[in-house]
Length: 134
Image (cartoon, rainbow, N blue to C red; front, side, top):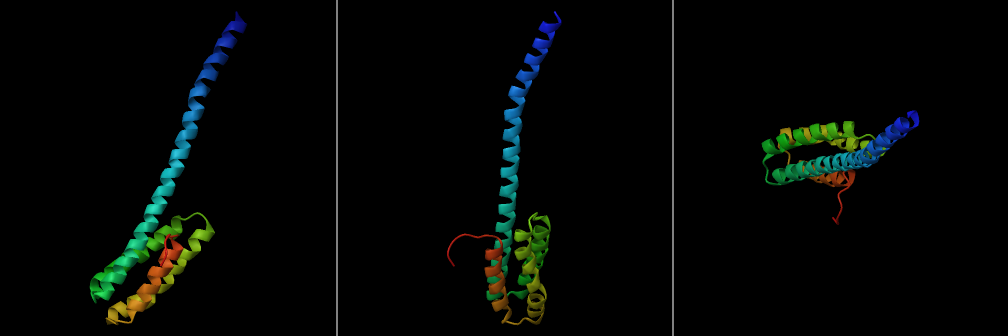
C-alpha cells in the first residue's frame, strides 16, 4: 500500500513539473525579450531627442532646443545607469560630456552650437547601436 501511495505521489509531482517547467522557461524567455525591447525603445527615444534638438537648433529655436537637450541629457544619464554592462554604459556616459558646451551655446544663442548638436546626434547613433548608413 505504501508503495502505491509513493508511486501516485511521484506521478503527481512528475505531472506538475511536466506542466510547470516548460511554462516557466517560456515566461523567462518572454521576460528577457520584453526587457530587450524596452532597452531598444529607450535607445530609440534617445536618438529621437538628439534629432529633435538638432532640427530645432537648425530652425534657430534655441528655447525649445534647450528643453529637448535637457530631456536628452537626463535620459542619457538614466539609460547609462540602467545599462548593466560596461561596454554599453561607457558610450552613453560619454554623451554627457557634450552637456556644458551645448548648454552654453544655446544660452548665448550661438549658431555654432549646431555643429556640436550634429556631433551629439552622430555619437548618439553610434552609442545606441543605430543601424543604417549615414
